[in-house]
Image 1 (cartoon, rainbow, N blue to C red):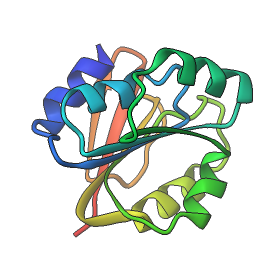
Image 2: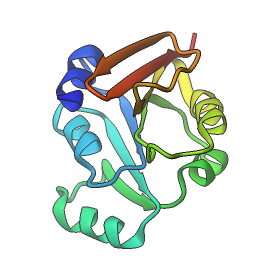
Image 3: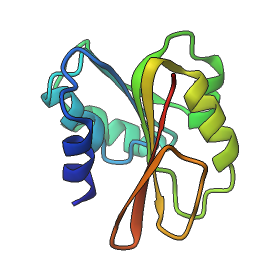
Image 4: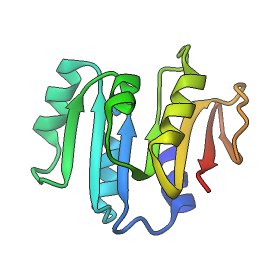
Length: 141
């Protein structure tokens, strides 16, 4: 439900550069790729999960899997993204650092989306609740 809502809210993502942090199975990033994103990077810390993602996603130079901690990736990243999606574990402790680094890695008018428990409140531009889950949005202006 959240994935469908996310892409309905984002609308047209064709030609956008998309970053999926805490990629897990890679479903969000893969969906962005299928919907025409110009490039997609999936970042996942667990090496076994990275291998599993690489074994299941389409082979394409515009769709990459990087095995790294999300914060480490954001700190050393040189490029900027139109859309950054993050779905950290619900007991994640570094939300403030994640939010600040993600926004710093956005292009002008880019959007950062954070999936989290609905009881967490951040100073986001928008928040949508779906059951026990919420997605918060920040736009870089």
